[in-house]
Image (cartoon, rainbow, N blue to C red; front, side, top):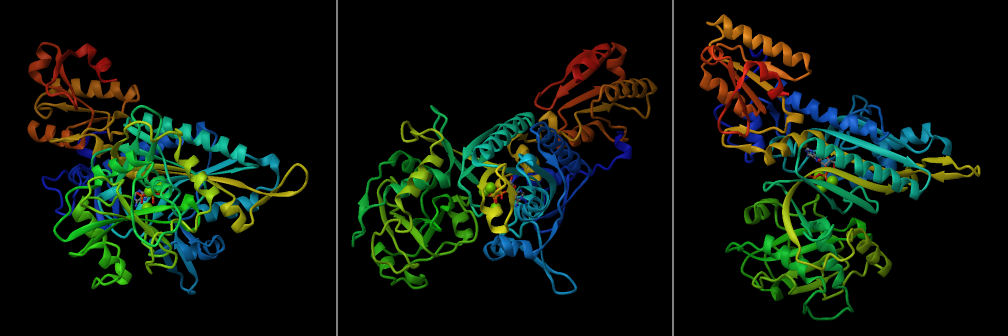
Length: 571
Ligand code: ATP
Ligand code: MG
Ligand code: MG
Ligand code: MG
């Protein structure tokens, strides 16, 4: 590629709305352009990054035995009615009508369509196991699209769906995907962590998230530096809450939890000084009767009140005693939305009220109720029969003893998610196959997502400096840029640059030769902003001594290299 024939349009300023580095830098580098809130054009340089990420993901999915197909973005509502998600999904699901007033959705994910495919295509145990995947545009009408590609409304996801005869075989499929994900994120050149996770709206019983470690991440990861234990915050906190289940009492009481270390860490992280108006924190978990569906939300109470006032519902503006904080309030206070997983439904909550005046969250005052917020006292987890609590503990405990040492907490960006679904969708949609005894059986499913476009943003959050992006080489828009000094005046420079360019192309290196007639300072600044990992500078002065200059993006100064060694140094 020659820069004069390509499209490069860098900007000095980022748009005012761009809050995070990846959004600022991708816009300034000309990689994305906004069409509407959360909807972007991938410009040529940005698309190159996306395609490279897709390439690695595709290679590893194929290597793991998954088979590529392509499902539609626009999907008929009937399938979503069948699965129950037409009702359940809420406002994030973009619903549209065609000219005949028939309902459709823009797919946020594709369990329904793939289960429909499976029930029609898979007849016999002999066809199993199968794993289908696609890399396709998703649409989620996110409540607060922000941060550029990090949380778009339209975005690119790889989603895979495995089908197995039984749970043991489904577990093997899950493990194969887990391993593929480990390889993918390693190859992408990112620092990441796999953490045990809850299963959100998808349901099921086993799940891991892959989190790119970055201070700007929206998620919190709790891990034990001395063991394998790592979980997202929702899951890490859940057992603290469940541990407090006890006989119903009439009074709210302070209870030290057996899982106190976990709680303390949460408090340290979240327990920033509260503002004047925000006086209390409430952690709530919606159980849906299923521990795997447990979600935790952070709630803030505004106003100068005491717990008694909340309890008795005396506070003006607090429905039934209290209300959920708006996302903005949470953001104002904590700079993030910890554990925010979806639309807040103030139904069937199990509630823990932490008094903010105590630094230690193990000093929980806990209470719960059955029917919303008629608040009668402690009634822990009436919805949760004992065995389910045990199940949840198993899910949490990748390492059975997370309480052991001091836990650490860090921020992450969720770039991948694997779920074991069991027969959730196959049952709802009647996806069966014939077992070898001739009897029909339910397909056991798993689903596996990777946020392709989010990875581009996450890589930048993790790798940037004052001058711009520092791409891991595997996903850089170009691996090498050749910057000839005075190419339009010097034939020697032009020839040397072209020769190296051809050699690199022949070696399969993704190289761009900057033949634009611009000042060196501007040229360098452009490529530092764009984040190309290796820059080769060729000028008359150096060539006289048979030298060129090579500088990697992280280095402060260039190294002089004999022309004959240029190729070896850039590979
Ligand atoms: P989040 O918690 O960030 O909202 P999610 O849990 O809703 O993500 P999944 O349903 O697990 O997302 O989807 C699989 C992957 O798709 C996620 O791990 C993430 O990398 C990516 N993804 C989800 N939502 C978005 C979005 N709005 N923009 C870009 N990528 C996204
Ligand atoms: Mg999530
Ligand atoms: Mg989401
Ligand atoms: Mg997820």
